[in-house]
Amino acid sequence: MKKAILSAVAASVIAPVTFAEEIYAGVDMTEDVAIKTSAGYTLKGNLFKPTTEGEYPVIVTMTPYGKDKEPHYGPEDGIIDASEYAAYEALDPKFWVPNGYALLVVDTTGMNNSEGQFSLFTDQEAKDYYDVIEWAGTQDWSNGAVSTSGVSYLAMNQWKVAAMNPPHLKAIMPWHGMSNIYRDMMYTGGIQETNFFSYWYGKIITGNASAALPDALSYQQNNPVYNDVYAQQVADLSKITVPAYIGAAWSDNGLHLSGTIKAFERIASEEKWLEITGRKKWEQYYTWGVQNRMLEFADYFLKEKDNGWEETPQLRYELMDSYYLGEEKYAESFPLPNTQYKKFYVNANTLVETTANQVEQVVISDEQPVRFNYTFTQDTEITGQVKAQLFVETTQGDDLDIFIEAEKLDANGNKINFPIFGSDDGGFTFGMLRASQRQLDSEFSTDSLPEYTFTNPQKLKQGEVVQLDVALSPTSVKFKAGEVLSLVVSQHDINSKKAKHAKTVNEGNILLKFGGEYNSYLQLPMVK
Image (cartoon, rainbow, N blue to C red; front, side):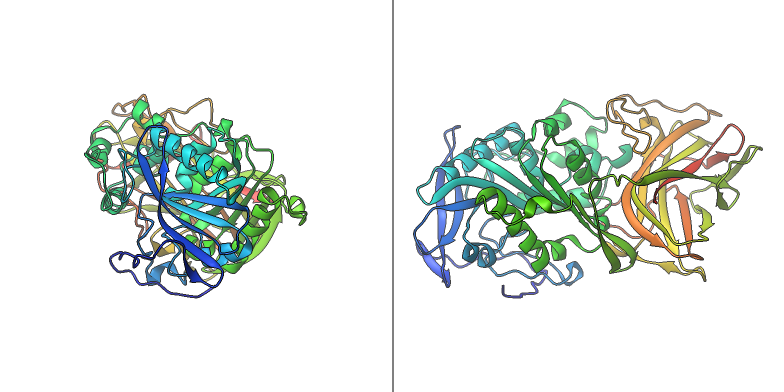
């Protein structure tokens, strides 16, 4: 595989190639293959396959970013090990085709060279994806076994089509794919995201070929409560039964991490694997290690190759120590079977293992967050879902927004940074919640993971103390004896991130209660 560190410049179009031109030794590319959908319009795809005639398994990707556009990763994304024909967030034909696969990269409905009407994650887009999979599985150069693959949007759209169970779909490989765009990006914790969503949607619509483009930005701004339109974008994960190899990154908290892990837990597939890195997602996806493990998975399910894949542990994860330093570990399930959830109670400026008898409070102002520290006395692994339970009231107004982040400090009190979404100086887990959106969803909430309905806002009354169960992102981090966990609670975003929340509702101070009847705590997944 050719190494190319691709610069963050405006996307450019790959020079047109002739029909079935050999672009690398043994790799043919056919540009703008026409695929007629059951809806009557035509999608266009680029087909890469071996020059030697035969029947090959097919890996399909549907992209809104343009199958002909060079990827636009930046230096901050790490070293991306991919050739110039690897579409943005898609597999590299230079690796896969010589290993006996056909790759089909298709412009999604209404984008770039494809006909139809584009809209985010519609049922129609999923039906068109279904048609593409069935087309790929019935060509004379296909062995009838199809998988999907891709990162981000190219993973998110796999959930919906996999739930439709196309007959020729034998496996899926979604990496870093949130499973609910409202919960995971547009309104995390019920608080509007005000930076990344507009950037991301703007990047998509540059390739718009539809007659009219839905104004997703205005819709987000004007519809803060979860509704049928948002729900329509979400796959029924319980209907996914095909084998799945799923990738996530602890560093992608604030975007894909939580939704990807929820999807892994909720799909009905009996054969499923999850790999989680502490490093940057694109860099991980294109590593030789990941590509070769994906190849082993695909060989097993698409070629029926007896390669021992079935003995692979269900979970492969990185236990983070600090930035890009960690230990690779394995487990037979996620959450880890030997997890003990332990509560650390808020007490003045510390976290303690038993709650105080007397009720006290601290003030969280607009200018000043509060911090609570806990010093570990022995080496400790924390891996899994984190949550906080906080009792709060506002001094002014009828609502409040609260932001929480857990940082790691060394024995001298210096912050140890971790990569997070859009930054290299983050904590290891964070979460947020709008108090009026605190109503729990009884269908999905557990003791370790609060889920919210987001359909029934409940405003606050002056003097009313409310219990907030705040979901923080899953994580895996090691603390050595003497190192410190520092819990920061704020009215605003903490540390620098690409996802931002500028439109908070706080008008006065937040009073955080603890002790007595107010058992405010941080709950951590401690691994025995």
